[in-house]
Image 1: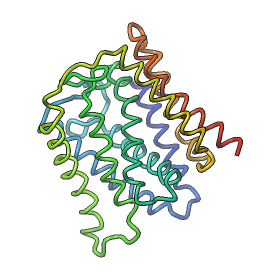
Image 2: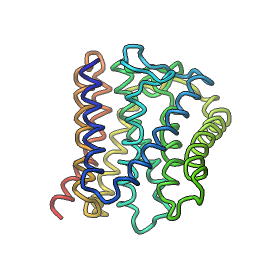
Image 3: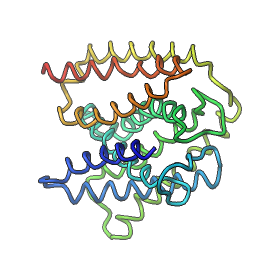
Image 4: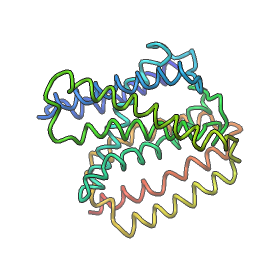
Amino acid sequence: MILLQLTALCIVLIYVLFHTVGQAGAAGFLFKVSIVSMACWITEETCIRFYGFYSYNPSWSLFLGHVPVLIILIWPVLIHSSWDLASQLSSQRPKLIPLATGALVCTDALLIEPVAVNADLWAWSEPGIFHVPPIGVLGWGILAFLCTLFFEKGTPPSTPKKRIGLPLVVPVIGTHVLLLGIWWGALRWINMDVPSVPMAGVAWVVSMMLTLTILRQGAGRHLKKKTLLLRIPASLFFLVLLISNAGGAEILVVYAFASAPPYITIMVQQYRH
């Protein structure tokens, strides 16, 4: 567990250093990720306390409340990375960037959550996709969407209280409101385990459809090399985590590898451009 945490911390540090050392917008970047980190921690802490749907393995080294400190540091990197990717893919339609960011984070969560749960990093008390309830995946996307709204604002709020308070309060309260609405309005009444084999099949069908869309639209040509390169360390991290805990979870491996074709296609397009 210590090696896993040190590796994850190194990935976070690499990302932060790349965006700060010698960069003109370093102060703005640090301000944004700090606010997002606080908003994500408050959201997670209150969700765990209020609803009790999940809990972290106590073997994590350092906690702030019920949330490991490392998770608090990872959140803003995950959201900022997806925002960076979405802002390039949706550059012609900037109003869609927050929504695209939320969708990308949901996509990441569909991979990260089952792999992390299988590795016993945390556990859910509700059924779902590979022991992950859909509300958990949607929570990632909702929080990312609301946080990204403040990345996209051209003019910051006029006072320090608003500049810090609004990006903290809106994502936290908004996430709770939307999660409660989605849960009691729909997911609560269809709360069940999703069969793993059909889910893996669906994942591959969606993967092939996305890959074909990327090939037709040439999405990789709109991206910067650094944006893709900075996502590789985390991808390799979860690949190793997946393989090292693959015993008895072969269908999860098949499911997880469905995420590879779209990403590889984008990489190939970008490097041929």
